[in-house]
Image (cartoon, rainbow, N blue to C red; front, side, top):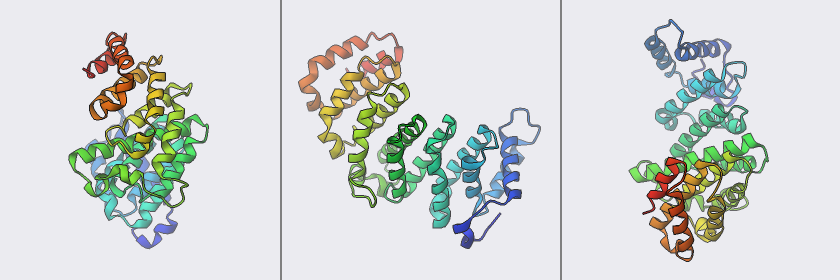
Length: 306
């Protein structure tokens, strides 16, 4: 493996290192492998000492299309765990390499790869901040506008994950410098974007409330719900549109969407009850109705309203 940071800008994997890491990952995840799993783990930990080991993992996740999805996903999950400890001490060139490998995978054909990429992106945003990765915002918007189901799902999955992580970190006061003023961060001007990120993203998410695809309705509503407690100015200003979307989804055929509608009303009555006051009769009738929903999880979520 290449240990010199000077080579980062033109980094390429060496065939021997690529094959060895893939082989270790294959043995690690194989239920029939006779290899000593603890020994494999120790070997992977040894490789972690090389500055470009995480580059290999990013390459395997994003480009090793001849390998199984399981091996690529294992590389991604190991990368995610490594970045939590190593990201801030990595050379900027290696950070940039990993980010550049992740973005094209937002719309990967395999759902497991997309999900893993979304999780890694959320960790990078958590550690480096949204403004530290302006290309990400542009890539997410491009995916949302693509009319390609894989790209739209991948973008919304990543969006929901990094906002969820930031919410969690704000509660724990971790990464305080990044998470303290999340609404303000989303409301800042970002080079290369025509408007502030939240103003660009929210209208697109509202549009997906009407999607024929359950996955898109669920991801869009789940993503917007993550902002309720934060209440950025853009959500505050578009609350009527958001409420109209909630009412339109109230009797959605998908139980997971109905559950998210209930969760939204539960959060709103706690954080901003004034928004629900003009609609309180309809909301109460709806909550009473879904208290008896055929899906137990939806009914349970509705009970939280009281």
